[in-house]
Image 1 (spheres, rainbow, N blue to C red):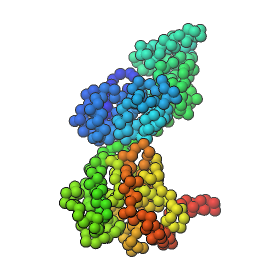
Image 2: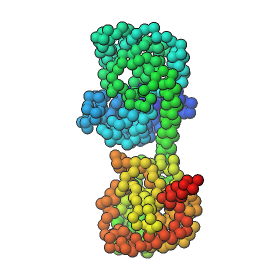
Image 3: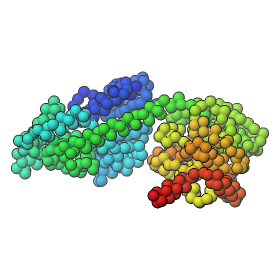
Image 4: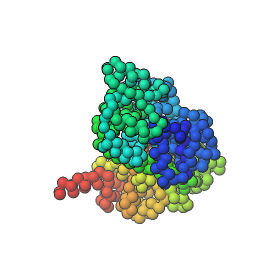
Length: 538
C-alpha cells in the first residue's frame, strides 16, 4: 500500500490539483491510503510500503521524526516548505541563509524530493545542500483537462481584453494586477470560478492575463494554463518557476503538446522512484550477511558492529573472521555483538572472508576491511544502485589507466562521485549477490598474499560478465558513504599498503593485473578503447 500524506485533498488549490492527478494515476497500480497530515499516526505510516508527502504544514514534528526514522518516503515539493517564510524570493539570487531554512533533515531523509521546476532544485541544492532533489519540469494536468484546453484553443475567440484573478490570497496579489491595469489604461475584468472547466473556458476568451505573484511560484499553473489557452501573460518572469523551463517560450497548442509529454514523463518518474522506494522498504527484511575481518585493529570492531546494526536496512547476520595476530589475542570476542565469530590459529589473510562468505544463507553478502565504518545508508545505497546496475559494489573503486595497478584513478569515499560509476575493481567494502562467489574460484589465485579484490572483479567479469561499480558518494550525504573514518583509521602503520610495504605491495598487484590482462580481462578503459577502435574502422 502507498500512503499519500497532504494537508488537504478536497480543495481547488494548485497543489491539490497536482496531487489529484498523481493519485488518479497511482490508483491504477496501487492501493492508496490518503492521510490528512494533522491526523497522521505511526499506525497509519506502518501500514504503507512507501509514503508520498505533499503539503505537510500540519504534520506534527514528532511524526516527521517518526517517518524519517521508520519509513521510505518521497516528498512531492509544491511551495518551499524548506524556507521559514515560504518565499525564497526575498533573498538575493534566492540564496536562503541557514537561519531561514527549516525541515532540512526531513528533506534529506526522503528517497527523492520531486520538485515542479528546476529553480526549486537549484535552491535546495545551493542553500540546503540537498543531493536528492530532482525536477519533473511541470505541474500535473490530467490528459482530459489538456484535451479540453486543446479544444478551447481551437474554438474559442478572444473577445475580451485582460483578465485579473480575483483572490483574497495575498500571494496572488490581485491589487497589484488591478493597479497595473489602471495605470496603463488596460481594460480588464476580474475572474474567478469554483468550477475548474468553467474557469478555463472563461480564461480562454481573454487576450491577456495580468498576474504579479507576491512570492516565487514553484511553477505557476495559472500562467501555464493562460499560455496554453493562447493568452499573452503580463507578469514578473523571475517569480515564476515555469519561466526557468525550456518550454516557457512557446504557447497555445504547441505548449499543450509539450506539457502533455512532460506530464507523461513526470508520471513515469514517480513510478520509478516509488518502485525504488518499495524495493528499499521490502529490503528492510532483505537477506544480507555482513562479514568483518579482525586482524590488528580489534579496537574498531565494536564501532563497526554498531554501524552495521544502525543501517537503514540492517543485515540479517553479522559475522567476524579473526585472523591470528598478537594484537587481537587478548580481545574478548564473546560479547562483541556479532552473531558468529570465526577464531583462527592462523593468519589466512585476505581471501578467507570470500571463502567463508559461501556459507552465508542470505542473498547478499557484504564484506568490510577492519578500518571501515560505513554510513547508515550504505546498504540502502548499494541496494538502490544494484537494482539499476546489477553487479559488485564497493567503497573505493579503481579504474586502471595502464597495464598495471599503479597510477590508477580512484572513485568513492576518497574521491567523491554523485552517480553510480563503473570501475575495474573495488576495495575497503564490498556488497554483492552471494551467487557471484562461484566465479571467485574459477581459477587458482595468482597469489594468496594479496589482490583478492583484483581477483574477484576480474573473475566475475571474465566468467560471468558481472561488472563492478561504486554507488554514489555525494558530498552532501555522508550517510551514503562506505567509509566515514577511512582517513583516520586507514593510514596507520598496520595497513597492508603502509609506506614501508609499498614496494612489495604494489609489485604484487602490478604483476597480478598484467597476468589478468593477458588472460583477457576487459577493463573499463580497455572496453572504451575497443569501442572507439571499432567505430573508427567503420
